[in-house]
Image 1 (cartoon, rainbow, N blue to C red):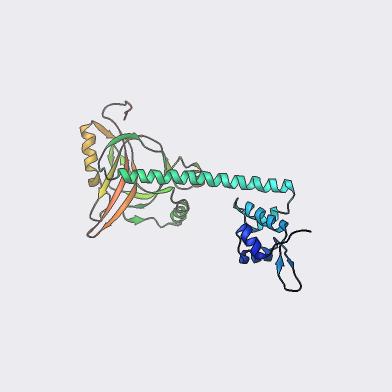
Image 2: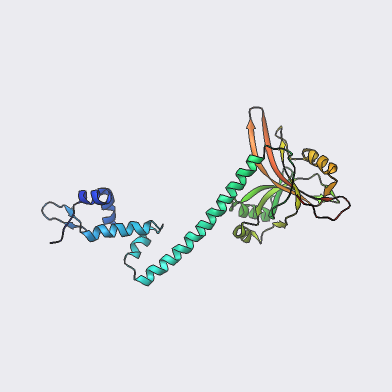
Length: 276
């Protein structure tokens, strides 16, 4: 004689509430027998195993419907679904690995950001940069609006970037703002490759942090300590300055912004490659 279980028994064995059992019954996963005399539900061992099998596939993040379908699929159909899920999970793993790296990079920058004007000569990251603002004026043409929305789809891999153009060995007064992506995030860059962005290759740079107080904008005056350091070390500008807004502190009597900047350099009257 086949042993049968009441709802309370199933709850004890599997730790599943009566309400959940009713749910499983309503979606067709199990079909308990009903006692015509008292209307009690009775579950067979196969019902309990179906519940475990269903939860097993739900553990792989299959949807409710997918998990129900798999339980009635042929083996080759199950293999196909597992292959699809493996690809999906692999993509998620890659995404979260990149997300972790982005978070750790931000954490490191914030930890180093208090060392204002602590100059290091380092290779800058290669960046895809697009700007939609000059000083305090945004570009509002449709092409810019469309491009901006596209970049914002990829936060937090997108930096709130700054760009100061170089002309004839000097920086111009205009400061551009926009968005930048480290090209190490290849899938993001691939998605944005046909936009208005421009790739800025890695260069030997002064890597430093700048603080702007009094709720003011980044300006050439903010970079004066960098220019003094360059003069002392016989260094000259070798391209556009790029970087990003790192953080903003709202203080009781001030708003302070911190910038992480990369200033391309080379030695005066020399084509030698600088080393850190």
